[in-house]
Image 1 (cartoon, one colour):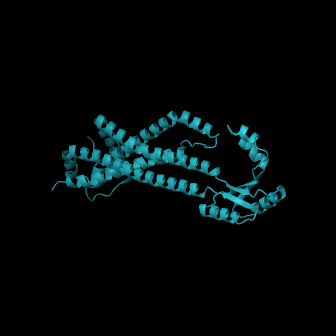
Image 2: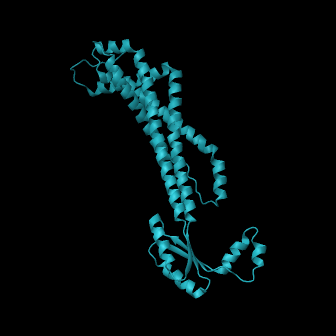
Image 3: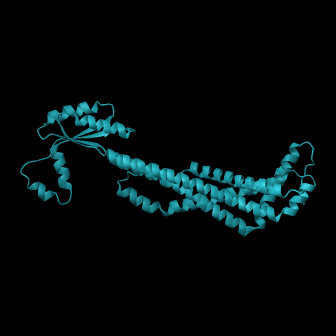
Length: 316
C-alpha cells in the first residue's frame, strides 16, 4: 500500500497535502466497502433518525398554515341594537373602518343574515314561520394582518363602548389557545430534532470507534513510521462525512416518498377547506440544508470518536 506519509519536521508541500487527502478519501471509501452490512445498517439508522426532524419541520409548516387558515375566519362580529337602522349602521361602519387596527369592515343587513340562516339545513321552515325578521345589523370587522392578540382584544373592547353596539363576538381566547398550541408543538419538535441529531452523531461515532479498534496494529505502524495524528485521523473523518451524506440522501428519499404517499389525502383535505389550506410541499432549500447538516453530524461523530480512540492507540 502506497501511503504518502510525511516525516516529522518536514515542511508540508501543497502537492503532498493534496496527495494525502486523496489517499485518505480513497481509504475511507475502501473501508466502507469492506464492511457493507455495517455501512448499510449505519446509513439506514442515521437516515431514519434524520428523516424525522425533516418530517417534523414539514408538519410544523403545514400546521402553521392550518392555524392561519383558522385565524382568517376569526373576525370580530359586532351586533348592533335592534333599533339601529341602515344609516346608523353605515356611519358606524365608516368610523370603525378608520380605526388603526382594522383592515376591512363588512356590513351585513338583517335580510342577508336571514338568508344565510335559511341556507342552513333545518332552519328554512322555522324562519318561514316568523312574522318579522328578528336579526339586527352586523358589522364583520377584520383586524389588520399581523395584529397581536392584545391589539384585537383592545379593538373588541373599544367596539363594545359604542352606543349602538349590543354585542361583540370576539374569538380572542380561541386565537390565544391556538397560538399556545402551535408554540408548544414547535418546542417539542425542536427538542426531538436535537435528540435525533445527537443520536445520529453517536451512531457515526460508534461506527468509527469499531473501525479504529479493528485497525489498532495498522495505526501503530503508521505512527511508528512518522504519520501524525491528523494523517491517521483523516480517513475516519472522510468516512464519517460519507456516512453523513449517504444518510442525508436516505432521509431525503424517505421524506419525498412520504410526501408522495400523503399527496392525495392532503389534496382531499385542502379541497374540503375550499382550497384555503395551501399545504406546502418540501422545497429544495430544506433538502440541501439536511444534506449539509447530515454531513456535518457525520464529520462531528467521526471527529469525536477518532480524537479519543486514536490517542489511546498511540504507541508508548
